Each structure stands twice: as structure tokens, then as C-alpha cells.
Length: 392
Image (tube, one colour):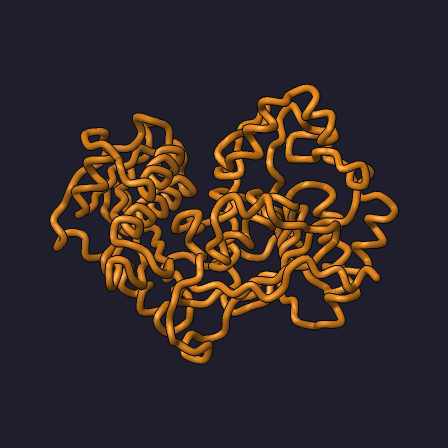
């Protein structure tokens, strides 16, 4: 049977360049031309080019979800994106490079072709991008009209994300100056960030990342999770629970979710950093075995631990993707996000617009709470950091 063929039309726009931005994309059946999926999102403050790339990524992901074996003909009125993705133009801008790299990972090389079309032939994607920007201006999220939103999933039912938005850049939640009041921007989305409770490795200060032994909570860690649950139930504001897939985080999340009567949604992007050969070692042991690598890692967020697949810089990109998925799924709600030191520090750093090395200057205790509010104009406000009052 011949491979199915899709046409993806994508666009993005910014009212100000940079300014309030959004993207839109449609997936058409390659034989009939009928629209079979739509995607759009208000992405806060960004440039036209960033928005266009995000529209491309969203369109490719929508097509991939329908049939990952399909061939795809991407049509855009952005000559820049088409030429760069076709390999004819170099990608020099640092904001474009990670977006182009991500777009290339959706389908295998050879399944996607790119072609330029005039703007008047890209009206559907342009319409969706403007709908998304209008929705953002009104303080709400764009709602899909072709496919219903995915239902909530429990831990046991977790499945691939449908039509999920991607991050602007790793700096996309940095606060920006402005005089708009909170009332003008609608109800913010609040992420309550809970670090998991202790494991047997925590008091020994051993590296415990995403490729190690995946330890469970210790007896003290379970006690900490229960105290955090009590505090969050008493506040009575949490409306959804999202967790890293790692066991210690899931156990902590479940302690809260059971009391609240809520399911736990798993988000892969919230897992801890991969510490490579340092997994299970104390800092002193890592320094003794890999002194040069450890020194380089502490000096730059772009350096990976020995044998690791990611640095703090790539972790920030991954976490930004996860953050934007959560913000899109739960607009205006208070969401408990259970994760680890690296991801939570990255979320706080991004919210503050702090330099990358700020992650080395934060302390996050086991089962501590942080909170960040996100507004529809792209601003973020840190409300709480390393709160351990519930553990006393």
C-alpha cells in the first residue's frame, strides 16, 4: 500500500515583531485537499520568524500524530523558513537554530518536502494564527475546531501528546516590562512546583538523574510527600497534577493527587537531567574520577556530564517544551507540577529571565515548593521559592 500523503500549511505572525505572536497550521489530505487537523497557539512575545517556525513544528506534529509513515508536503509563504529547512540557506540566528533542529526530528529525513506559496494561498494557516493572537489578547487560549481536546490521562493511561505547542525559546517565559494590570490580562496560569521527597540517595548527596537507578521514596521521603499533600489540600487551589515519569516524582505526585481526587498526568519533559557516568556518585567521587569534566560542567551550562546526552542548556529547552504543554492544557488554572532539582531550577530561571548560570546559585530542598504565575502576554511572576514550611 502506498504511503499516505499530507499537505501541511503553516504560518505565524507577530503584532510588533517582536510583539504578541501566534501560529496556525492545517493538515490536508494529500489526495482530496480536505483539512483533517488544525493547530494554533498564542505564544506570547516573539518575532514573526519564531512564530512561523512554531507553526511549522505544530503542523508537522499534527501530521505525525495521524500517520507517522506519511510523506508530507509543507507549504509556507515564508521564504526564509522554506529555504532554511530545504538546506539552501544557512540558519544563523540563534533563536531559529533549535526550532529548525526540532522540526527536523518530527519525521525522518526524506519524508518531508518544502515549497513556497504566495500568502493568498496560505489563508487558512494565516487565519488560525490571527485567531490565536486574538484569543491571547482576550486572555484565553485558542480552541481547536477540528479535533476535540484529549481527555485527562492517569499515570497508567499516559499516552503521546496530541497537537502540543512547543516553546518560544528557552527564554520564552522571561518577564517583560509593561504597565498592563493583571485584570487586563485575565486569570494567570499558576504552576506550583514541588520537588519530590527524599530517596536513599538524597541525604548522601549523590547524583540521581534520569539514567540512574530510578530510586523510590525513602521512609522520610514518603513522610515529606504526605506533609506536602496536607499543605496543598489545605490551600485548596490545585486543579490538576502533572508529574515527571520518574518513580520518586510519581510517588510524590500520587500522594497529593489521591487526597485531591485528581488523576496524575505524566509529562516526559519533566524528568531530571541525565548525569551520565556521574549517576550514583557523590560530588567528591565525581570530582576524583572526572575532575576536568566536572570543572567544565560547573563553568558552563552548555557542557554535558561525562557520558551524558544533555547539558543544562538542552535541559532548559526540554523543560520549556513541557512547560508550554502544561500552560496550553490548563489555561487559567493552578497546576501542581512534581519534578526534580534541574527542571524546577530551570523553570524558575526562565521565569525570572535570569542568565543560564543562575541554576548553579539556587538551593531546592527535598519536597520544597515554588510557584510561578504565567500571564497571557508572556510575562511570568515568581511567587514562591524553596518553601519548606510544611515540613517543620
